[in-house]
Length: 294
View 1 (cartoon, rainbow, N blue to C red):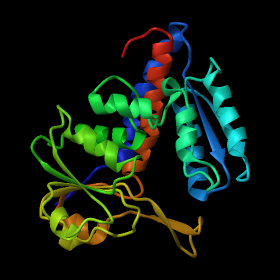
View 2 (tube, helix red, strand yellow):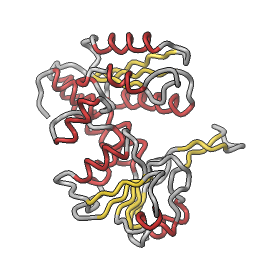
View 3 (cartoon, helix red, strand yellow):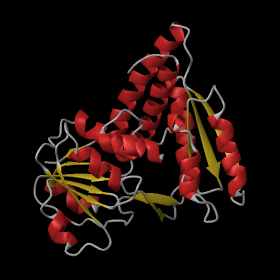
């Protein structure tokens, strides 16, 4: 019988840990962590995600700021706002919610963020530090996945791990983290140009699906006893529901789950862990600013 990897439960536990640290900072007269978010446009998924981040901040005792811009904002105005947050001594970490409108360069925007305030862990400086194992801010979703794997005591050393998807946000950084000392997995990354994906995935002890294609991973791709982590969150129409949509993962959960040892649900799996990783990165940034190690 498979076990559910409950990201919501683990995230709740970590938020309690973070709240405890914030209480200690407060008692010691130290600075309270401050996380800011920039939201451009009215993308429904982004709206929900950022609203949850603000709620998370309230839960753990952080200060939070939400900056909204119309989807027609110029790249120059957006980068000016990023510069302002970079120079604001009260802001410890901030994110620019992706995706951005097509006329704005995501790479340019990410590159404009101060690496020391990069709560999402996307800046090239932090990616470079991650690659060679130096302290920095890890990309939030990979960070959350690694934490889930550790807290469920899932063995990665020597295991064959296949990551479906090669994005700079999930697939690529996660492949590096899983292959580093301490995790010691043997990692294969497959993508839209990979031949024989089904055959490759079928050999995996651990499958991480991050391709953005609903129900892409089917039961015949998964060997018995595999660990399956579903990063996909695609909105599908669901007439009759309160929201009018439902979230679909990259894994055909109903048919894949019976073959697994562990599997994450969608929603309630990786998503809450991504948000808690942002809190962790911001907490570390605030502590460093106060001269506190760890």
